[in-house]
Amino acid sequence: MSSGCGTRTGANPISGVRRKTGNPTRELEKPMPKYSMALYLAAVVFAVATLLAGLKAARQWHQASKILADPKWPLDPTGTLLFRPVDPIIAQMGDICALNEAVEDSGALNASAAHWTKIAVILGFVAAIAGIIAALLE
Image 1 (cartoon, rainbow, N blue to C red):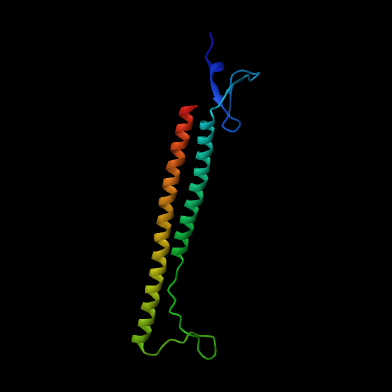
Image 2: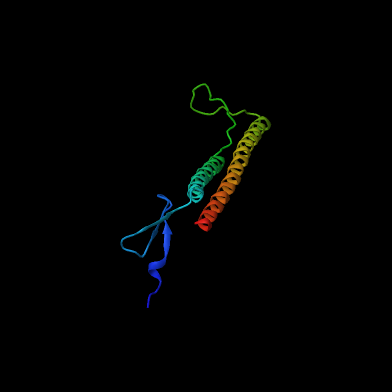
């Protein structure tokens, strides 16, 4: 009694040729439809694009987390220490301005990273759908 293992067929998405997987001589059957091959290729292209968009988003979030507040005080005449104003009000105003600039820069990077994450999700969805349709049409 046969278990049916020799009757399974599979298609090689690279060559586009269907082969009997259980037959040692690997007789060729009909080739994979061209639209199915194109969908497999589209799925791979969209998957790579998803990876690149996700990595760009991760890089921007990493850069946003590394932004530091710098009041940009000039150096003293010896060039070794920061020249900080003597008046505490002016010194605090400089620090607050530096914090505001850091928050603005970080927020802009976070917004851009969220945009790239949205793009990565859409590309991943398209890649998954293309792969599913290609598998169903096989």
